[in-house]
Image 1 (spheres, protein in one colour):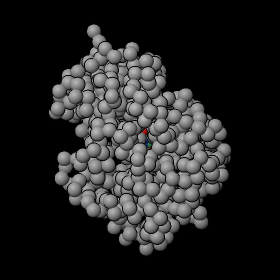
Image 2 (tube, helix red, strand yellow):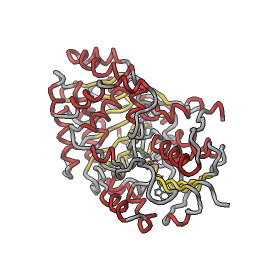
Image 3 (tube, rainbow, N blue to C red):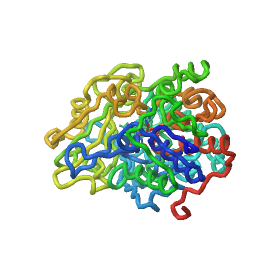
Image 4 (cartoon, rainbow, N blue to C red):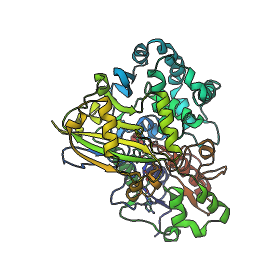
Length: 488
Ligand SMILES: Cc1cc2nc3c(=O)[nH]c(=O)nc-3n(C[C@H](O)[C@H](O)[C@H](O)COP(=O)(O)OP(=O)(O)OC[C@H]3O[C@@H](n4cnc5c(N)ncnc54)[C@H](O)[C@@H]3O)c2cc1C
């Protein structure tokens, strides 16, 4: 008998959609091309069986905050999100550094004259953190039901306007605070400054002082394991090593959800799509690439500013103007001599990841889409600049050029790990301008990947919104199921 629902792809959004649909009493099957489920939530011992590396996502401010994961309750399922003392750090030349402590007061104390400005920027958002998260991770078609979202008006739009335009260069006096914010904005992987990147920067920036920037004890795959366990406990079935090449293979299901980038949607369903919608997917723009580097090192990174060793995430991009210049160059297709690098030392929070004298370091550089270059030397020298002697601690390394990322996961087109460029148009029309962005013109076929609102990151919200759309339209189910482990 065929399933009620088939989901193609088992990333966090595919799994979140599966959990919602299976908990609604439907029979659900997930087909995953890779040998292992989880998409961007996979971990592996890349060099040494005693050291766990996160292959894609490593740090989880969104999973700690999103409505889907709040209801799903990772802690209640035994998944520990471990908080480093410093959410993210940003070293600068001359032995200076911006440090976003979990504790807002401590952060402000370190920022000197800019401390009061950082507090004025962040505190109102921290106080309304849940409403802010629900607003920015909504389906971007309607205000969340929570009236507290309204209390963000006009605070949030004015902040986005000030920090997303040239104005942003004049809002702080020292280099640390603007560098901290620019590092958070760079997660949008787009030219800076920009309004969507400012929204991303304020979302991620304030989370450092609210629900945090944690890592999962044992690796990001523990999050996928919890999703899969709940899904299968509710009757769902996951088929790994099962690529779907033609949507007609699974059309007997009443609903098909595609956890795919638009190019993947064209690959499996292109000839069936009406010309207008197909054209929108063909014209969909992909963003710059990420070139991944994993290191096995013998000791903690010898940062010139030792406190940086207490940070889970480090942004290596120079001061605000340098970050803006590097990200804008990459968005225009030029490879800067020193690219922006994001780095995580997971053992800053999770000692279980390694062994004495053997530790993982996770990093990636922003490079032009499709860049074929091996990133190891550039990333190594970026780290060395702020941590002299780092090279002497490296026992092994592995670089994955942006051009090779899609052979690991076809959703990373040209190494774009966000499943599509982030710009004003593609935030709202993601992947095409429709009132319900999850529904396609094909009866019963939905998109649920990061190429739909609210975009990239491990938050499960695209899967959650897509599942709710399909439940309403195909099955007449309007109330979302409980996601709590206690009531299952
Ligand atoms: C290097 C890197 C670092 C990152 N760091 C972070 C981070 O620290 N924090 C964070 O929140 N986010 C991070 N991200 C982004 C995050 O991983 C993604 O935004 C998220 O995984 C997107 O989820 P998804 O479910 O939409 O798709 P994906 O996770 O991409 O999953 C899609 C799945 O579909 C499968 N698939 C594709 N085509 C087919 C087919 N035809 N048939 C069957 N299966 C198919 C793929 O194999 C894949 O498993 C990172 C990503 C990368 C690559």
